[in-house]
Length: 242
Image (cartoon, rainbow, N blue to C red; front, side, top):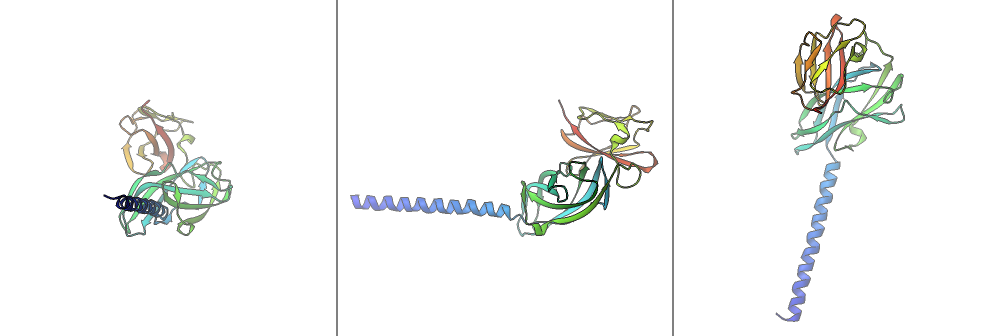
């Protein structure tokens, strides 16, 4: 091979390498852009008109994949209070890998902690939107809700916190103990959810007011307890194996 031929071969190889890097960069950029244009639409978010401090509010909502492609990602529901300096609140720790088929609508349940760091007493305007891996989608796909937040009310309004009625150790290792305050009877029935709203356990507490949770996964759990006089209470619990 002559010197000129060798130079031409090297130039062709270099040109191929440059084209390959350009195409690779375009593919990476396209993938990034596709991840940002997430195609998730929040259809409804059933937050009550009135909620109360020191409670966990269960909320049903649904999301639609508006694209013609499968979507798989770490789904997060973002919750922003415009009234309180745009503070973003965690929706009960709802954040999990979820799959959406093309144009599929899926329903979920989550819990909102009604705490002073996320709400003010009186009227609050909140914005809710879904996203994958913490990337917000356009504001047109969000829902804006006005909600009134009142002081603790253990009878009317949304279900109160179980801490109004019981001493509960948190975190918990193997058993949840409901130790009554003010002569409250132990719960009649208890349902335990994971952070995505999936039911993990339904049980009647034992005579000492406890429930075995040793077989449940570590992490954030939500407790719904049916009390006497048709009152339900909620509590966020951390389960640990250490």
